[in-house]
Length: 258
Image (cartoon, rainbow, N blue to C red; front, side, top):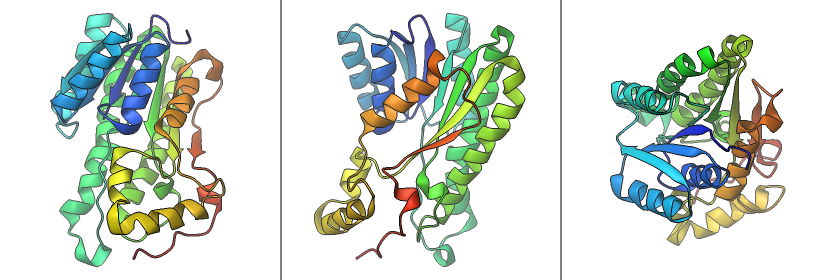
């Protein structure tokens, strides 16, 4: 098992990419400490992990509550004496035209995607640096590489998160703490399935056809990349922003919404 004896903290872990990473890390021997806004799906996931023989603890709160988020990281570090892996996954996505969006809505995506990653990372570094060991993985998005209508706030926040990842890597590298970002394209999460349901189904098919691999990604595929970056196999990889998008960032822009 590649993460045996380690402690991995994952935000936004109740479903989708976060749940897939939590499940995979637990299967590889990590104690996974999970947080998400909704208690019911978080507890359901924790139960599934325990039933499979995994070790898990969890807390339900909004990572936008930065004092609570910092306290959660500190509590995990204090309880286990270590935080080996931090995955900043909790997302916020605002769909709005720039002319119709106020600054508060624009800032919301930064508050969750960037500010929360900063708070959790800063707290985790206080545990990782003295041990001269650790890996921080930020979940960015191809929207941070490509400009998309209606996603200006989300795209700008994810672009900022990628730069923050590089800054983390530069500061943490001398302490043997690695920091990387995963840059997913469209992944088959519950949110994606909901967005492309009903009348939007044909739009979703057209988007998939424009991806060079001609399909959307799966959460377990993102989890496999996260596992590699968290493991000793990636010991010389830091400051990387790795796309897992089926080639979408190299393709043409998406079609117009219906």
